[in-house]
Length: 395
Image (cartoon, rainbow, N blue to C red; front, side, top):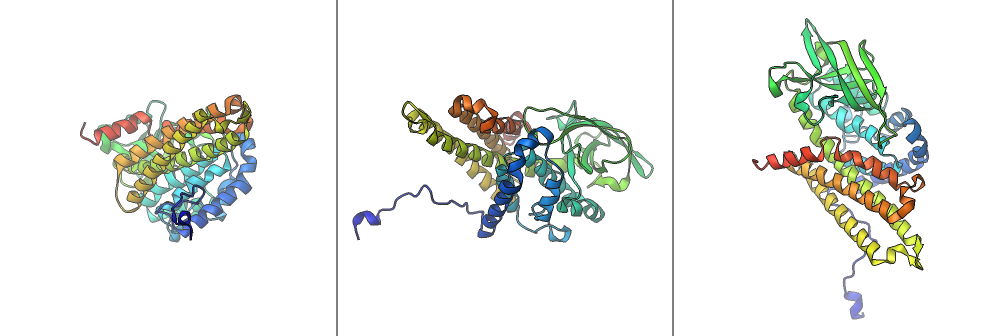
């Protein structure tokens, strides 16, 4: 045997798998990717103009993709937390950030608090059909005058006998125009501070629920985003989700899972943009050679790859801690902040590498940038994440 045969050499093309993923996760990954490429991606351009249709929920319900980590007793697949990460990562192959966000709101933002805090009746009424894709869910936190300042929420729910009367408005509500029910954050005691909030599970067809306006956005065009009004909406006391007065704490818990899933989607989106641009850089010729052969471009890819990998490892390690029963708010905030920033930086650099082509819709990278930009705002702005992290050190 030649001495050179015993030398360990790097294989940069070898498939890599993080320790949190098993063979089953990889099989699931392949199934979701094949579905996204075959059944969703061909419609991506159309849905940018029209928003994606409700049949996507039903189809994903049929395939079992809406309840991957949800209990089997409610129709879910009973998988672990990592299955939801796989879904968030592989939906990037639908080439539609708005679609991925609409699904994530349904599966990872609205459904978890119902499962965690809901009564058996609420779970049967809403989670079971939601997992089948027959009912669509949304989450109502942000208001015209209360975004990052959740404590500034003004939507009121006032007790009236065996009912509550809800008045107020919500904005930037993903799935708001199509949803059958909303997990609604309200104020039930204006003098109780953080102990004065309560969640309600409100059917969207009740009298007084008004879907006022379909909002126009920079990106995420395939998702519907609503301005909602609630005018003397009457719900029974059984519509309370969790405990009266504990809504703020319930929603803060929900936000942790939402931020981690969002971070995973950011990493996958950045990787997708990187891959598309790498292929372009190997084919596009300037000054007699592929542009990827120029040091300035090669170094751009090296920088992007390093940032993506740092975000990926942060997300996966934090997900491992979360899945093993920890509540690592500081690290989740760091992962969300870092992954969102990296995704936007990578998308911007990929546009630059494409040059004028990157500014054109046909190449797709401009859409990735527009869709990714929301991640530095939604589910907690960069500034809020920085404050959470800073305060965790006693500052």
